[in-house]
Image (cartoon, rainbow, N blue to C red):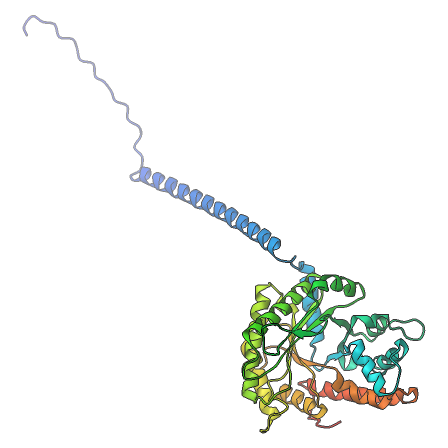
Length: 412
């Protein structure tokens, strides 16, 4: 407008920051995002790990509160080492586990009094200091009452066995009893005092223990009740033994009475072993530190058909492979009443072409001792001859139990 004064306009300079390279802001945001994500992920992993560790601790506390105390790492190594020692190739266990009643019956058959001294003489036949038992055996199984037997010079039987470089073990069941609600089947007793017994025998140098359950094969047995009862008993025994550092030998034997054939024996053996393994796992038993003793899947003594020991050996190995996990420490064959049959069967099992998942050896008693005891007949003059006969029996078994031994021996 004319005559009006117009104020001069100031030029405002806008300061701009130096131009950064293109895309730099986006890159910085991307790096920051990745860092944030990695930190968040690491934090989640730490929280998850802490939660898992806490859950594991709570689970272990729960297990320890509900079950017996687990063996320590040191005890686990000892259990595995002892189990491996007992089933070394070619070596077995001498089961000198007759009760006092059975020992006295043997003495009376030789017209000897049932005295402490005569019992000691009987054990001297197959456990004398002059015998080289460690060349054929890995361990000896006794009853607890024999620990008081002493030799000349005051040396105890348990000390004598350890000088033979053998593992010492005890049979801990107190015998069979009728199982209520079954058709003439058997259970065992003695669990109520087992913990105290394990403590005592451990102090006496024991390294393993055995518990024996038996079954009968008939058209209606073994029943599920008997299998469940005996399997649970054996599992409890194994768990308590391992708690005190003892290797358990769980013995599930089928009596030879009856006229059942080989297939019936195999089917019964399968049911018994499946029940046993389940019970062992339910009670958290260390399988690598556990040994199993079984009878062969053989026909009954009254069976009128042909009994091929080669087929019996194959059926036994197949059943063991099917039912026992490879982690098991090893398997022992229980006693056979016939010497020649036991030798042939042991030989056929070791020479069978079927691959075995674990070591198999023998744990025999009277079939080894009977001839030597008969030769002794209560006379001190026959002692050396009886011991020589015993060593002959053991050496024959060593050859038959060793897979790498050359040749086959069918007679003594």
